[in-house]
Length: 118
Image (cartoon, rainbow, N blue to C red):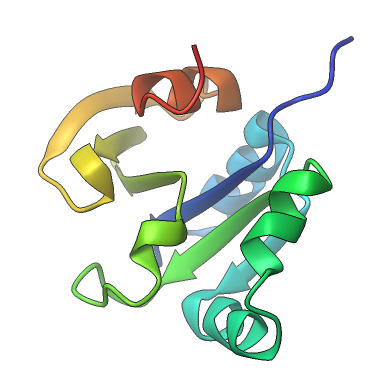
């Protein structure tokens, strides 16, 4: 099996434990952190996003609100999840561009839909 691509994924915070578990399994997540933790890690080491990518990790960053744009440009993918669908936000800011079922979600499709891989 080939290695999966690395990604920093921003997502809304109003997800239940089942949805979080599905995301962990479907996207093979290595870490799950809040935006505050993400921002702190960048403040300590500005190369943190580079390290994520160079180590081939997939990190899910949970946002309190999509109105907070701090370090949003560092996300490879921004998705809003509601009613079993993950809505890809165009240019990481919105409006929603494409929707995926969380049950068939995979990292390659998300990155491809956001023009991060070919």
